Length: 69
Image (cartoon, rainbow, N blue to C red; front, side):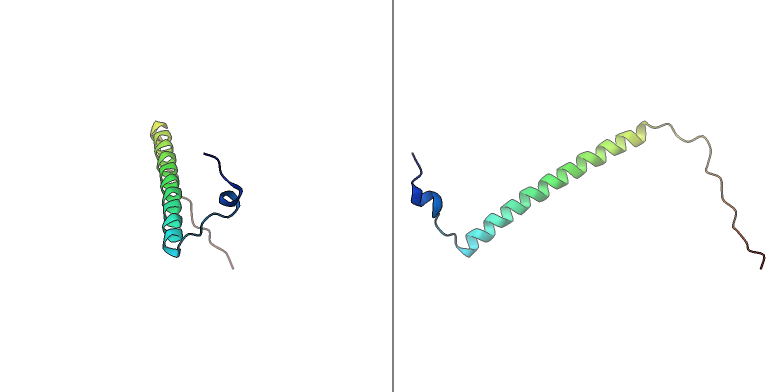
């Protein structure tokens, strides 16, 4: 099966509904890939955070600065 010149350079026009469905499918695929990547990154960061040792002491409170004017 070979593509003729006319089929290659002049593909049939899609209806507006078919074009919208194609666009929606592509967008869903992209969003799904981004969500998967985000979840993978979140799991990786969570594992790294849990692997760190717990802090020994609470952070020191900073005093409030006052001006002498």
